[in-house]
Image 1 (tube, chains in turn brown, cyan):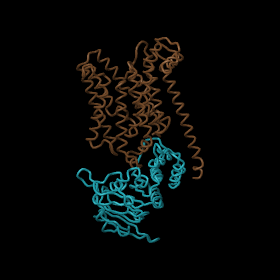
Image 2: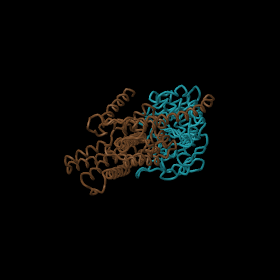
Image 3: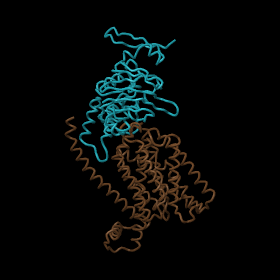
Length: 356
Length: 254
């Protein structure tokens, strides 16, 4: 015991020093990923030019830069990279939260019916003409996502679950019911009223799409991502306490109902905001939490920031791939994340079986 | 620390699982809770632990209702060891025990050397030092139960509630868990199935149909008429010729 007392202050100092280095490392990796996301594309832009544009825009540095480069970097690629980073980090963290709260390794941010609802909302605007052109597809998607989540939450509650110590199974089942309903509605709307052109556009959106992302989208995506990451980091100990289930968390003094309600609501709103910008990009919220857990262990204090970082870098990379894999054509980013994510997830499953 | 239940009742739908339970557990006492399956032992423990809110009555710690203390304050005074809490996460024994510090930590009160000391003490008290770095998945049922008790001790509780902690364990581990719990010196409420093991408690409470039907010293409680009435078995007390301890033998009622 005296040994523990002697070494612990050193360990504390080590932790603080470590934290500083880790934060710096994470910022460096994220910065490099964003820079790479801006440089790589159909027209390659040298990093020097990118940095010059950023210096001009941010600090009025006055470097000589071609207007076309300035336009591509500032208006197109930087916004895409930032929204990709925000979505990746946000969805990954939402996935971590739901997997921890619901004690289910297959939980992801779309479990609560959010992506299904967003799709229905977007299709209602794009195909059925709701809002008569005054409402954007994003707004429709956000409204649809919130409506679907409200229905799923009400259903879970009516079934006697919702938040509380025995709610996890009912939330999952309610989410499945809600998702199926809204997916069917989306298919119905497309089959009934969309022409081929519209159907292709919708499909593109449903798979996740960063084309057409501009600064106003950044202004929504980054705050949503930062907010959910901060909320998640604030609750890492509470999430750890769910290791042995909600009952055990309650016995450890975690106000289970309040924490569950707050985290699920925050997760739903953040996911709805992110999905309304980019469509439902799959696999990030499911696979990245597992990757972070494999690398950093199950403690949320260490794996949560790592999941956010991996999610951000992964989506920036997926966006780059979606732009360069097929020359002259941009793939939906969800196709890329699924093509990379599905084999990665299969690997995790096989490894999990081997370990079990 | 004194734990009381006053007129405790808990209803699920229209069915009362626990009704009118009033009991008082003295500081340092080991109180055994016995009764057939479905008699309300687990629910009563959950009410006493503050995990379920009573439909009627209240549970009190040193005279303060649990509801007024709040979950965190309750968890600093009282620890609850569930029946077989499991996880699929790849955590170590040390990780699991560190969870016990949760009620003492927050985003503004980070992990400190004191927390390390309490965790080390809890691991030592349960004799799990050799297992500290082991993965949860590699532990036997008895070892897992010891880790749960260590986790509970890391909460620095003055009251310990255990829900059938010896369930599914082999006899050696059953005895070692009971010995461990009895030696802690905490106010303890323990639900038990084995009536011979229940004889080692300071006092026993008997649950039947959601009601506490008898409370008293084991020798007064574990009598053939009561056992026949509550458990529906014929019981006979045998005396060990070596040391004179009483032992119960059970037969079905013909």
